[in-house]
Length: 231
Image (cartoon, rainbow, N blue to C red; front, side):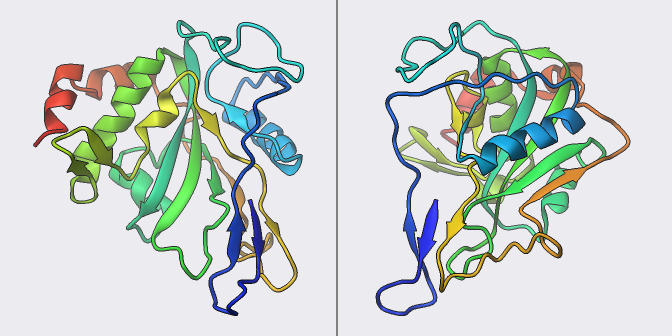
């Protein structure tokens, strides 16, 4: 995203959204731990690239990705996408979910810290110690909302849509994560100072990866999650 001073001189800058591209080129990386993943994410974010949650069946060279995401792929990392969460800090949210003892990467959103933003918005990346399907990841992310953020999880249209704090869509095998570093034009200050309040942060904890077995054990049956949407 790009941010410019507003034309009416208000404190809220004018934002240019991420471009919608139909022709893409893929870049493939390997990381064996969350520590290895950290510089790779920063490298591609600095070049204005996005991150695909799933896996491609073919490499892309300025072409459409339609139909090329592997629906049967197993996943060894997950991202918690906090959106305007009413929290004092990311660590508070992770502690509520029982995830504060696992190493992770924090990337605050492009608009994080700007005057018009309420709550905390950030990507939080974790490694998994085993493989999970996209469906298992989506169900777990949905369950986190019902279990730990019930007051901020709101069903709409009789469960047809759901306002969540942790976005379950990030578990989809076709999901794009917009990680490109924002650009601030003269007149708009970046609220994330790299020395005091960095946008990216690697947090090392006691455990290097979330147990896949824990995710499976804690997540209710999909029918229970479906019923909760209409409560």
